[in-house]
Length: 140
Image 1: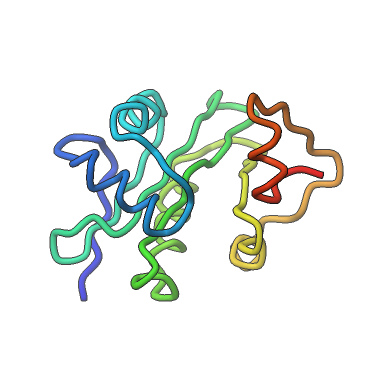
Image 2: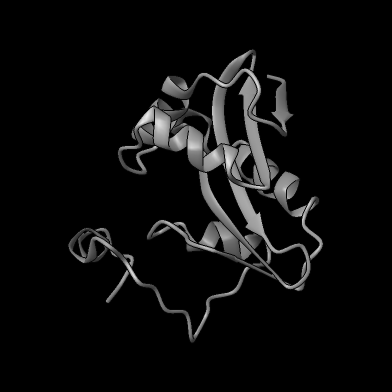
């Protein structure tokens, strides 16, 4: 199985991208807002296996001090094959900043720890939907 990593949004089927999130399962993402989020991000990565979209991720950055990685997502049947690692590596290779932050889905922290990320002691979040953030285990 050959994995191809693409670094732009050209030709992305956003219905398919939304399906990756739903099947991962990382929640419901509507295709148009998902497209807007990725097209507004400075760095994007899409992973394809034999022409099928199997994973994706994105980052925002000020280009100097800070960057944040978002939406690292891989189809369940492709997890554990190095694709998520490849997406994160692809994104990190294009970030030249002092600090990179990310949100992890609950239970996925060990995956990011293997990539060198460390748990924050002072992280805070402001959520428009506090109930969902609580229910999904993102906040206390």
